[in-house]
Structures are given as C-alpha cells and as structure tokens.
Image 1: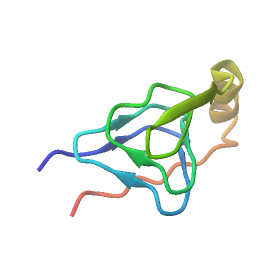
Image 2: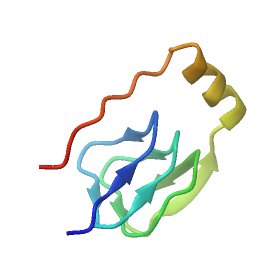
Image 3: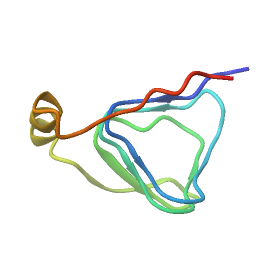
Length: 79
C-alpha cells in the first residue's frame, strides 16, 4: 500500500477523496468534495475534481502561527 502524507496544519474539506501515494504539503487547503490525485505543494488552495489551484496561503504567516502554537496537528498512525 502507498501511504498518503499530510503536512502540518492542512485543512481538508468534507467529502474529499485522496488517492494513495499523494503528498499534501504544509498549510494546504483542500475544498469540500475535491478529488486529489497528485501532490499539493505547501500553502496551495485546491478545489474540484480537476484539482484546480485557486490560490496560495501566506506561508511566512503560517509558519509564524505554528511556532506560536496557534496551529495544532494530530498524527494518526496508519492502520
């Protein structure tokens, strides 16, 4: 099985499908119902089944918020 990597502070909307082997970078945002079949870079905002990039987060601000513990991540082991 290929694992999916999900970075720190990623937001994943309801009903998102992620195919095996995909890497989702830190701070990425994935809109509700999107189909993710290829890697997403840090801070990309992605929507739809065509994985359309509609914007990018300010990663400098994002990493500052992580360093101030304003973003909390939970790591779930693969089962």
